[in-house]
Length: 68
Image 1 (cartoon, rainbow, N blue to C red):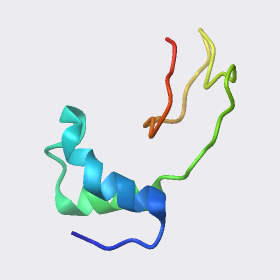
Image 2 (cartoon, rainbow, N blue to C red):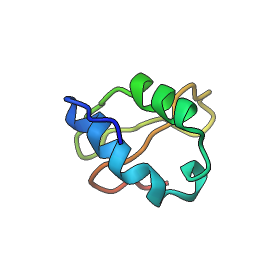
Image 3 (cartoon, helix red, strand yellow):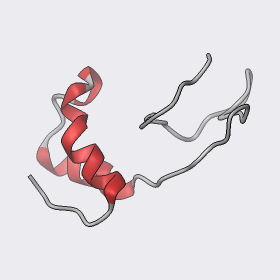
Image 4 (tube, helix red, strand yellow):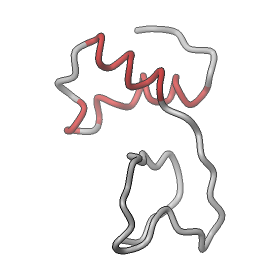
């Protein structure tokens, strides 16, 4: 396991194996993925995106709830 100083990246390193979609990533792809992730914070009632929007991001929810 790589040791990251960034709490988000450490969270991802520890928890990605819990998500089926990410279980089979090679170590190289996993490191690239974690390296390129950034933290975004949203307030209650904020929208990540709306129906019909083109999305260029993937979100992993660290805490809280999202309504789809």
